[in-house]
Length: 209
Image (cartoon, rainbow, N blue to C red; front, side):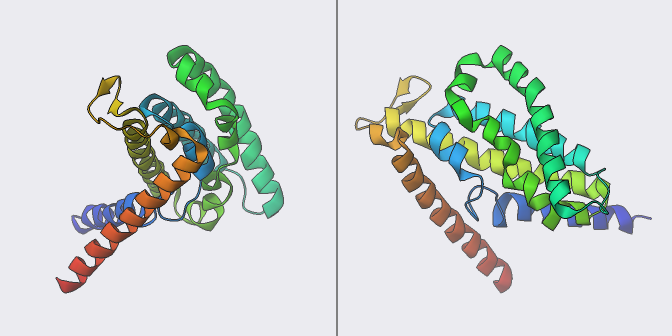
C-alpha cells in the first residue's frame, strides 16, 4: 500500500518537471506567445493575464474532460472553444471588479485566450488520454508553468522598460522600446534561449549522476 502513494508522488514530480521546465508552454515551444508579447508589458498586466489564462484554461479543460470521445474531433474542438467562451464571461466580470485598469489594458488579447493551444491542442494530444484525476493535476501544473514564466517575463520587461519595478527605479538607463511588440519578441527569445540552456545543463548533470 505504501508503494502506490510513493509511485504517484514520483509520477507527479516528473510531470511537474515536464510541465514547468522541459515543456513550459511559454518558453519551450513558443506557444501562446501573442498575448504575452503584446499585452504583458509590466507586472500588473502580466498578473491580470495570468489570472484570465489560468481560470479560463483550467476550468475549460476540467469541464471538457466529460465530452465523449466518440464525438467527431472537429466537433469536440468547437465544443471546447464554446465552453471556453462561456467560462470567459464570469472571468471577465471578475477581472473588471478586481483589476479593472490592468484587465482593460489587455484589450483583445484577453478574449483570445479562449482559443489558446492548451485548450484546443494539448487536451487532445495529452490531457484526455490520462485518467481524470491525474489529468487535472497535470493540467494545473502546465498552467502553473505558464504563469511562472509569464510573471517572470512581465517583471523583467517592466524593469527594462521603466528602469525599475512597481514605481521604484533602480536602473539608470531604461529601454522604453522593450514595451513594444518587437521588444517583447526579442526579450522572449532571449529568455527562451536561456531557459533551454538551463534545462540542458540540468539534463547533463542528471546523466552524470
